[in-house]
Structures are given as C-alpha cells and as structure tokens.
Length: 99
Image (cartoon, rainbow, N blue to C red; front, top):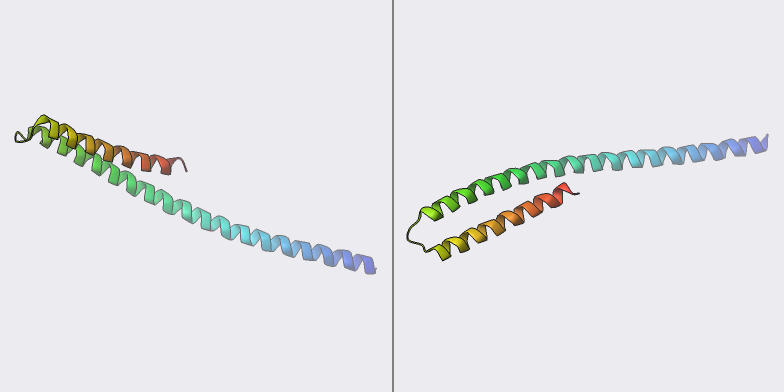
C-alpha cells in the first residue's frame, strides 16, 4: 500500500510539472504569435513605403530627364543614387520575407 501511495504521489508530481510546462509553452507560443503578427504588419508598412519610394523615384527620374539645365552626367549620377536607394530598400524587404 505504501508503495502505491509513493507511486501515485510521483505520478501526480510529474503531471503537475507537465501542466506547468504546457502553460509556459502556451504562453511562449502566444507571445511568438503576437510577435509574428507585429512583424507582418511592419513588413506591410515597409512594402507600402517601398512602393511609395519607387513611385517617387520614377517621378524624380522623369523630372530629371526633363530638366535641361543639368548635363547628362549629373542626371545619370542622380539616377544611379536613386537606384541604389531602391535596391537597398528591396534588400531590406527581402530580408523580412526570408525570416
């Protein structure tokens, strides 16, 4: 009888530990889901910002071409800078997509 009580007490202890672990894991899971949701929202905002930058870049490119007081070298340099900025933004967005 004494062995049965010890065995039952051991099982109760292990069950309580498993319940505690389950609760901790559930809380961690909820936190991670919330973090994923926040990161998705941030990614969407970055995509919108990137799209706005791309549209702005296109506008600037067109206006640069139309400006006659700059020579072609300055225009090409400015466009190259804008393209680098766009590429940097795309790289940042891609890094979020791969996480």
